[in-house]
Length: 167
Image (cartoon, rainbow, N blue to C red; front, side, top):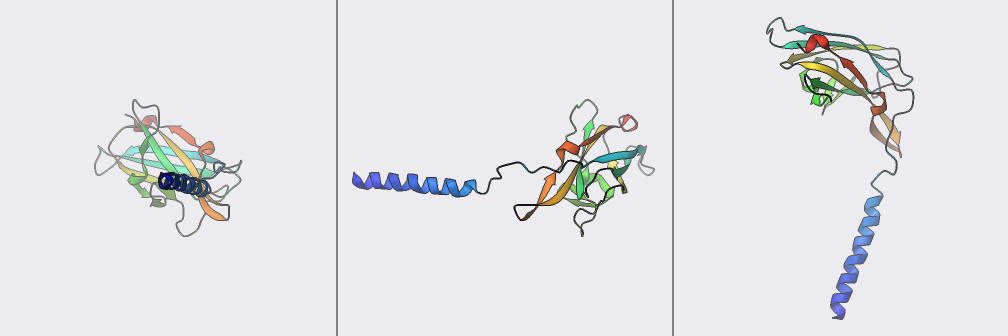
């Protein structure tokens, strides 16, 4: 009987120690971009692919009109009849950066390379569905707790309706 009590007590103590150790891996506050991160869609156009007219080519020009450099962005599309932009459009990129698991990086060799007041143009091709609108969410890499972290700037998300792409 004493053996069972000692075994259960040891398991409870070990569980408490592991729990306290794992709590150190969870950030206490969410990572956020600094105020002043802003992205602007300067130009957008949607045309039919000259080779295959059933496909569309989306051309965009982004401008960093904020105060901080950006590393890349996530791009999502909302189809006709949808309210939220849930479709990942990064797989259709033909120009405009390097696709890194859904994040499009402006320059893969340099972090936060898209500086304020610069513009960046790119094309998305091979879209075989109607895109009603797009959302672009900028991202940065910044130091948090002496570690380089990817920070999604959800507060700087930009949305644009694309009437020429939804017909």
